[in-house]
Length: 512
Image (cartoon, rainbow, N blue to C red; front, side, top):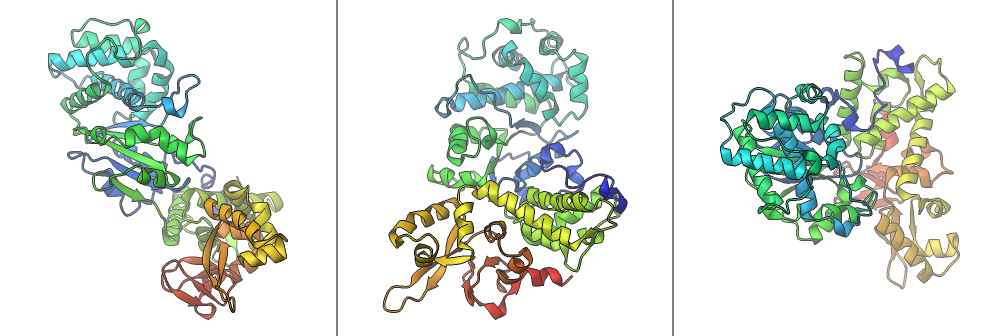
């Protein structure tokens, strides 16, 4: 591995999925509200965390999981796999679907806990022993054998002991069930003959959720945490915020369920779902919402922590492995655009370009830093704005009016260009950034590219150094990066900034 020469034990830019990083605790940088989301297990509260894709949602979820390892503070259930009925549509997903799936995981977790040898035969009252048997009959039929096997690793409370217990029963849910029921003096059940619904019982899925959580309390836990993640990654919802919200709506909109005693539902959701959640009557007064928005300094800290962990303390900054007049560490932090995942991708692309072009180089050269940064911006912009990028590249400047587009770029009427601009705005590629005087008439709206990486990708005929030096400008009042080629620009913080007052990102990253 190329990076070994710098003291790195493994590639810090290899994985972009927090769920695949077992050592994440060594370099996790918590957001300011992380402790609030973790909460007090003795007073469990449901909450919603919203963030862009790659914004750190899963990292937070994983850290809550890991905090449960070997602990009795809360029984941790991860609900991030959604087994869909054949030919299912969004409209088929109801509250019973979600609570049934949660109850299945909770029932399995309780069975594993009861198999540790730490539970007395008389600990469970007869009523709850009967409830447990009914839950087994309803939720643990042969239909879900494969899901059980894949779910074992999700129960962090028992650590490696969960897998050991599962293996001791030969990986067969029926043997685990028989062992637990026999221990409590209850007749065994034949799972292969059981239906996956409670139609033969008097109680609802909600009833079993409450009763199973009561069993968890008797087993020594203060509460049950259900961590919901990846709802936008199913076959029904992928890349569609409306569908992703509709998929989870039956659960997230039911306050009665979200305020179930002893249970907290923690949602980790794509931020594009926020508007649908709000429009549907979200109650932040009862279910708190938190938005992940990482600052450049926080992304920089993440990069430092990551390099430090992967090098066993030998490397603290990207600048230590590059031969560059720039502050490459800070440059990567800006390009990441508030995304921990994109921070990893930018760093990885820089290393890739070095290895591709100069595999024996003693350090990573400055031109590889720029080349890797440019390619990373191009790739990310194509992923996010693929439909609009060809047209935006025709414009060639970061800000423009509809008249300029109509007369000088697309050669159409101003009325014809408006729907195109509106579609760019709807996608988040373009936003209105000000007005341009139009003597004798109303001022013309000034529009601009909304995102740093899109600016690099759209201005494909301009050197990346020039883009960072001329068009990416820091507001001195709030430090937000604005994209402008005007003598004066209006920042989203409300400040009007003259060009002479603003530092470019290139200037910032040259002052190391």
